[in-house]
Length: 336
Image 1: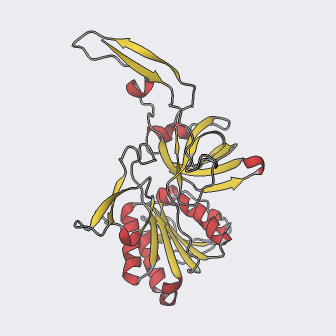
Image 2: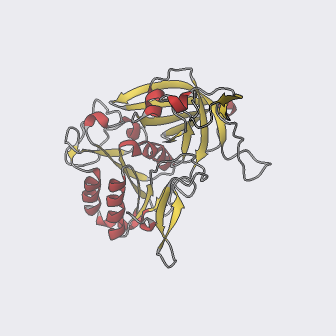
Image 3: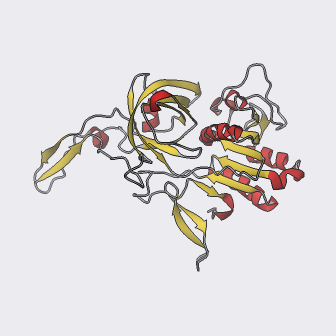
């Protein structure tokens, strides 16, 4: 018996709604400009690409957490009948990532001649991100994207609140930049389990308020004129407790802003549920970016389903986090 084993990453052609226009997504080769440790377990990855289709806050990319290479001819393995084959591919016999990993965009800078810099903030939690944490400047990386939908910036809402927790904070940074460009008055609420897990830089000349008051204390947000309140579960930085509770107290102290406010949130699902339910009870518009395990990022594998309210006999329907989201109206989500 024999089994054919292909080697190397598959070739994926850019996808476009109109063949006469630029592709809306594709596979692109990027060079690592920097891969800096921010805090315990968090890194900021800066990628340089000669071109990337336009992106919006809330979208994500899929990174191949191994060095991209040219496809090699398939191998034919022989084995005796009645015995299992002996595989030799590293991703099958060793701890090497096989699938791409999804990462939200923390920022983008466009340069001359179409060149693009992307910011990605990630936490080391498994084989893929541990490999990524060892990547040096100059290393090529394969980028699939941009993927997913984006946050909607409401022209009729002058005030904004951002609520981010853990690895849900990075897309809030990209969104803060877009909100500043749109002239929105923005306050941010960021949370982590402990100070050592907050993936942000503190301004040395500013104190973090311990009562949940937003201040000019986070460098990445202060760059866009955004004050931030910090909450940690153990009280090692800012206000002790859940960031969703800090946000709720702030919201209840401003009843006059209810009709002018829109809220955006990303982070752990219990946090987003609390934020969404707080907003729903007070009539505040809220958009959340859900997190799910994604294998393909394009709706093919059907692995990232979530429940949304629907006008049918069940009262809900399945949607794909990658293709229909990841951003959804919090009022439509069925929280399990």
